[in-house]
Image 1 (tube, rainbow, N blue to C red):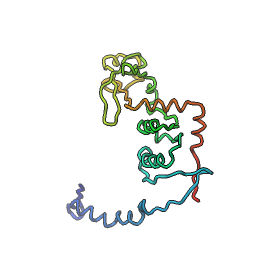
Image 2: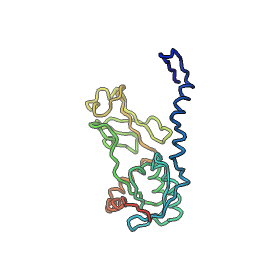
Image 3: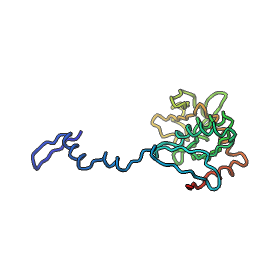
Length: 219
């Protein structure tokens, strides 16, 4: 809430009075009504992509992530174009659920390299080796990170032992946590992401991906 003291008039101005005054001076709702265009009122023209065909499209708000808008579009494409094999897409679609769905449907997801989002100078996730048999990770110092729990998003957590990490010579490159514990996460569908990486390194996939950035023009 806002509490304003007018020292000139010697008056205490309450929250509702302050907001009423400025809302009338700057009617934001009127400004929105004049400038916003509902999606249902937007006219979409037919378009081609540099000599190729646009099979379908999805209109969404600018703050909707690619991985969210993907599903409606994919269901329509899967129904209307059953024989499509290669799905070439950018890094915004590179998530476990999309990779899993495409591979289970017999499609080949062609996705780019995604730079690890780790702090400069620190070990990357690929520096930690996953042991599928024992379901654990091995750190660069050959110590074990044991499985602890799985969160609601499907990520399994693997933690080190603070007593081991506290005296590790590589701790400054591994973790800056106060309790000296390193945590690695692995999605329950991480196997599909590993298949995506194998596909990316397959001969011919780099050339397929280069064909993705095409200019769209109305016709």
